[in-house]
Amino acid sequence: MSEPEDTRGGQAGDQGKFAWRAFFQQTTRPLFVLGSSRRIRFVNAAWEELTGQKAEAVRGLVCSRRRHSTALAAALAPTPEALAGRPDRVRRPAPHARPGTQWWDIHFLPLPSAQGLYGWLGSIEVIGEKATGATRKLPAFLAEIRARHADAFRWEGLEGDETRLQLWVSQLRHAAAVEAPLWLVGPAGSGKETTARIVHSYSPRRLAAFVALDCAGLQPYLVEALLFAPGNVLEGGHAGTIYLKSPQLLPRDLQQQIAELAQNLAGSVRWMVGTDRPALELTTAGLILPELATTLAILEIHIPPLSVRWPCLSHWLQSWCARSHVSEEVVELLQAWPWQRGLRELRQVLEQAHLRAQDQPLQREHLPLALRLHAEHAPVVQQPIPLPSLDTILQAVERQLIELALRQCRYNQTAAAERLGIPRNRLLRRIEALGLSVPPETPKS
Ligand SMILES: Nc1ncnc2c1ncn2[C@@H]1O[C@H](COP(=O)(O)OP(=O)(O)OP(=O)(O)O)[C@@H](O)[C@H]1O
Image (cartoon, rainbow, N blue to C red; front, side):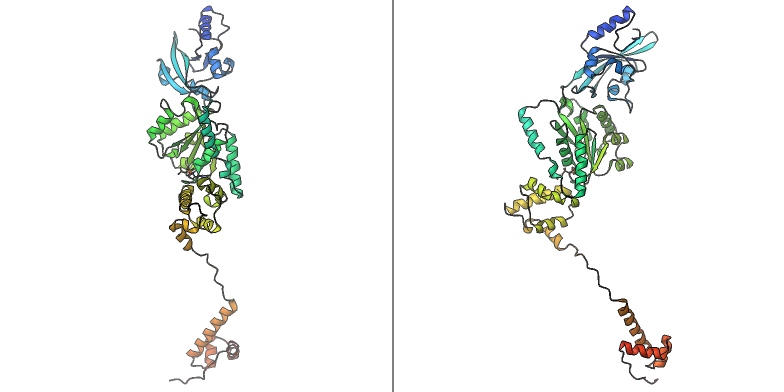
C-alpha cells in the first residue's frame, strides 16, 4: 500500500491507491489510517460521521496518549502491541467529539511496507448506548423518582443571610453552570457529598444519575471494577456526575488510571471529589497523584464551618424532622456543642430529639444529656477583674513601708525618716496624710 495523499482519499492519481480508498469509503465501519509517525493519514466517511470531525481538520493529528493529547488523539493512539507490529484490540471510552457513543472497541492492524512498518489501519466498533444521560429518555417512573430525589437537594439547604454563606453559594452556583471538575473540601460530615448532589441537581446533567463512589469504604479493586470493568457505572450513558469520596486513599496506579479516564471522558461525564484537605496539601503530602489533582481539582470550593451555617438550621429541621422552628434555648444549647462529626451528628441528635418530643415542640429535655450538661458546664466568660487605681496601690505600699521603718526604729521618727531616705518633716506630713497612728518611741532593751 502506498501512502495516501489526503485524509479523505479522493484525488489519488494512481488506480491502485484509489481502489482501497474507495473500498474504505463505502464501508459503514468507521476506519482510519495512521502513518508510521502516528499521524492521521486517512479517515472514511463513517469515521467523520461518528466523530463529527471533518477529514481536513484532523489530517496530521498525532495520535498518542501523552499528557497534552486531545481526547480524540488519545482514543486513536495505537496500543504498545500494535506499535510492536502486531494486530491488537482495545476498548476505550469514546471521546466527546460527538455526544452519545460511550465506548469504542478499536482494532489496530499494522500495515507492513517494503521499508518497514507503513502505519496502522484502525477500525472502530461502537459499544454501548447512544445519547448522554442529559439527553437520554428515562422511563417515566424513573424520571419521577429522580425528580423527587432532586427536590431534596436544593440551594435552600445552603443559603442564609451570612455573607460567607452567600459567597459560598454563589461559588457553587457558578460550579453548577459549568462543566469543570469540582473539588469540595471539608471535614467528615460537613456536607461535601450533599453539596455535590445539590450542584449536580442544578447542572445541565441533572437528569442523569449522580454516582457516588466511596473510596474510603470500598476496596480499591471494587472501585476499579466499578469504573473500568465491563458493566461499569459509565456504560450505558446513565451517569451524569461521578463523585469520588476520599480518592487519596486509592493506590497511585488506580489514581493514574482515573486521571486518564477523566481526561478521556471530559465532556461526557462531570467529575466531583470530596476530601478533608485541599488538593494541593494532599499532593504535597504524596497522597494524591499530581495528574489526578491537575485533572480534577479545577474548581476547589471549601465547605464553611458549621459555626457560620446556623442560619440554615430551620431548613435542616424541616428536611430532617418536618419541623422548622425550635426555641431559643434549644438553639443556644445546640450552638454550644462542638459537633465534631459535623452535620451527620447534628442530624442524628435532632432526629432523636424529634422522636422523644413526640410531635410536641422541641425542648431542652429532649436533647441528649451530654449536650445539656456541656452547656451547663461551659466555661462562663470571665469578666475582667476591676483594678484598683494607681494612687490607691501607691498609698498602700507607702503605708506599709512607713510602718515597717517605724517598727524597725522602735518608733523613733528621726531614725525612721533616715531609714526611708526622706527628711523628718516629710515623714511627719505623710504620717498625717495617711492617718497613721504612731505609738510612742520604745526604749532599747
Ligand atoms: N445542606 C444540607 N441539608 C440537609 N442535610 C444535609 C446538608 N448537608 C449535609 N446534610 C446531612 O449531613 C450528613 C452528612 O453529609 P454528607 O454525607 O454530605 O457529608 P460529607 O462531608 O460528605 O461526609 P463524609 O466526608 O464523612 O462522607 C448527611 O446525613 C446529610 O444528609
